[in-house]
Image (cartoon, helix red, strand yellow):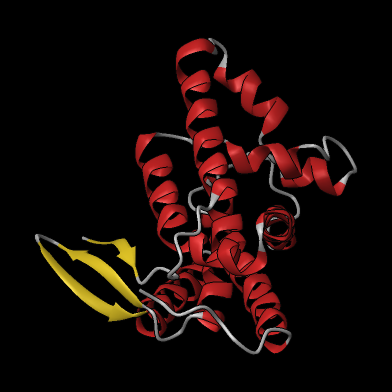
Length: 220
């Protein structure tokens, strides 16, 4: 098993309050889901994104609400770990307001990417993965030489962001194309195309941010 557990942070003690707020919101909503909601099917029907409904112009609010829902503890922990490791540097560059808008827009774009490849699906889609994938795409462009601290089974190693995120997106692409069969589309699972769409959105905005900011604060 491979998990990112840290990276080279921007020097200067910037506190990523928006990132921390998103992490807190996701955890609080998850706790509400699993400890206070008795009818999960109805809850997901109201707040998770169903591609067919969105295509028909219904429940458009789920484009936003779905990115704060998670299907289980490991789903939540994995997403929040990636958000905690990678989002702070992006927020330090953009500032809190622009980062908030970037994150939400990335999540919505990721949802649309998932819908494009699942137009007739009635399976609810949920999770922060699409928005976090946008963060990863921007990070790859803006901090390609940053060192990612990785837990590799029981050993801690360091790899470049280019290597770690390059491997990550190749894995998503492989899984995304493998999931395009009609049988797979009807059984649900991971929304690979949301990951890919969010990542592409982050890449595009990352190039824009990099082009319009010639200098970056030094990394620790």
